[in-house]
Image 1 (cartoon, rainbow, N blue to C red):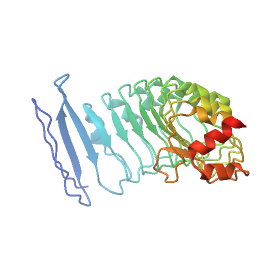
Image 2: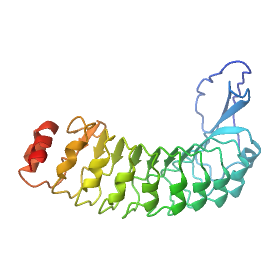
Image 3: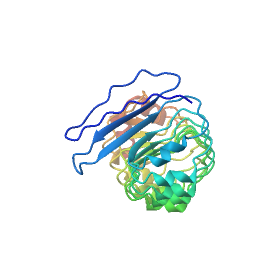
Image 4: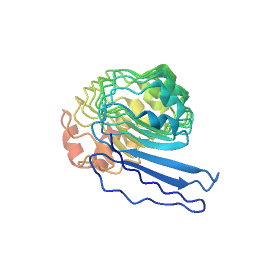
Length: 289
């Protein structure tokens, strides 16, 4: 198995490596200095396509902080992952991983974990031990629930659970009060529990393409929301207190826009007409009901 290495290191200033020309078989290592502790951090991009196993030499690179093993054919992560004690960013998206080892909980410096687009049906409860975790992406898997220990992720800010098999929003999610981004789109969710009100830091809540019939009043207590997407559900009515969400600036039509996404629902008349009139008109109507 051939490979090409590019290695750059600077003791006194940050060194930016040039993006290498991608070849069928190549490995890229970029080293950057850490001005705070004078230690060289290592970014390792393993871009060999169609790899079915993680090369064993990686487990000897204990100073690695960023590891990209995305877009291969990996079916498992060995327990040896625990040796990467300094890892901060781990990207395993776009593989065929069906199981994660318990040892992943030993990555106590991990801040970003990408596991989207794999074949995971469940997650190990030990991930809850990764107390520095800030970003967790689990989209496009077969997950229906999360372990209760994930409620201990006290620094988690962004959680992506879209395109899974979730019917009920995991209870542990409501315990992660630091969340500012929560994506639950394209699942099988039928209702939103009132416990959603505890996520007071939420700025973005996406729960489109589900089977939700009622938008609860508890959502109206999330006054930090800048984007609320409940498009493509089965909602017929909106809570009267929706006007409390003052950071929603408009009725949004483009999926990327901030605002209230609610148009693709079977809203009863005259509510549907007021939605088409814009947010100010909708809020005035709801206040007067």
